[in-house]
Length: 252
Image (tube, rainbow, N blue to C red):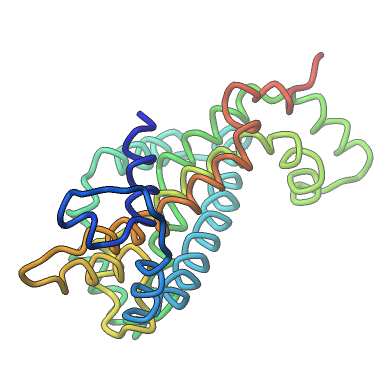
């Protein structure tokens, strides 16, 4: 499993002349990196992806947690039907929604803007379902104690409940961040200038700029740039993943 990543890193620092001829002498160089950064605005692509993925993850966690709490704890007419509609949205291929979603974004005048890249990713059936399942197992005694002390619904949610389910929220945030970071089709549709391209889109267009000869060293540099941030996010939040969900549990 690790072998492709090792090959990617090695080729990213290998001179192009050695890659094209197949005669490797294990001499390392940063020329591939200089070439990529001189040909395309990698820093701009990186910042765009960081903004889009970061805000999408934060919004997805916030809205999914609030919706999951409502579906798990509050009683109102049509609650179960509305929840099933959320579940049904998970079964619809995302490609089906592209045309109506693009029409809405276009009518709002958001084409080629950050909101166009971020807003569609703020809501999702998977996040709502995941957070609802965690809230169902959350002890209700803490909510009752908070209400006895005079805390309202919002204060109880943000001050007590949300911090205790932080492992689930961080897990959802990691999934959402990686998905938004790797997103290609939607940024391709709603952006039309170079300064708004995300990293995955910009590097894919850079790959398409090759004509007769593929520069594998530069391609491996692009792959490395796309891969490392997602791996770092996972490593920073790995202890909050499902195996450590008990960190937010409360014994009755």
